[in-house]
Length: 381
Image (cartoon, rainbow, N blue to C red; front, side, top):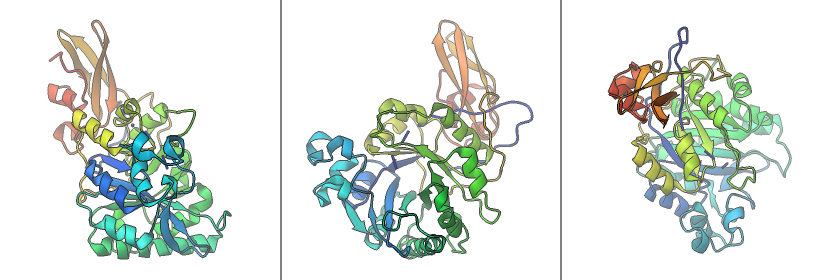
């Protein structure tokens, strides 16, 4: 995987109640497929990691390895990352491999090491499901799903890990794998979540809306090497809205390396996957956005109704002497961010709360404290 982030939301009569997980933000270090990169990520302030799980032909997971082409390919694919990109994960991957993309570690060894990292709140497993480059059969996918559950039970939770896990795969062709994971009766079931990469939001919900397990999360993104540098501005708002509505327990994006993009997406997504977790740490501290703790839980989905437009999800701000003031509150579970684009004019945007557990988030109003929850211009009070 590879990602983006900034949060906006809702307010009109007739909109259903908002659900909340009360978790903080996830600073997710990308592609930490060796032990040095995990240690480095935690030192840089990350509270989550994303790792790439490879399988044998029979569905047995055996190592963490992205591929010979990864985000580092467009940075320092031929080596020398410690010189050209000393602040990126690529430098750490290079410590155990000549080329950073080739870094790999035995699955048991890496998970047992990750389990013991203080402050680790989330581990995202990006499952690379191929059999000799071909699509795995239904039986093999199901077998892989069962074996992954056993892998994390024994080597994460069995080693004292307190956080959550998200298990994902690319495309609906791998639905049987995700379905098998969703059917687990593990005692850690409430901490195991699932997702599909590279699919639209509505389709993802429809395909993974299992009656027996609602631990569905949503992600969207593209490689940091993508020449288009595409930004998912419209989708980011819908991600925030649907997470707030309870359609998804959490949303995250990848791979976001630009500060400006991090700043935007941190308002809409619950997590950002980045090759530069240290930069994201600084941004989150500047904005006063708290990190999720290992004991925080990602809530199960509570709604199947996907919002497909953000046009009706509004709040309002008005200019008063000195700046902006909220004049139409965000709905429950959200905040209104006031901006001051030009003289005597203010605009309001519905965004994710700074603190989802705060009273101003649970019962938003038009007071100064409600405005501050949106992290905008509140000089009109």
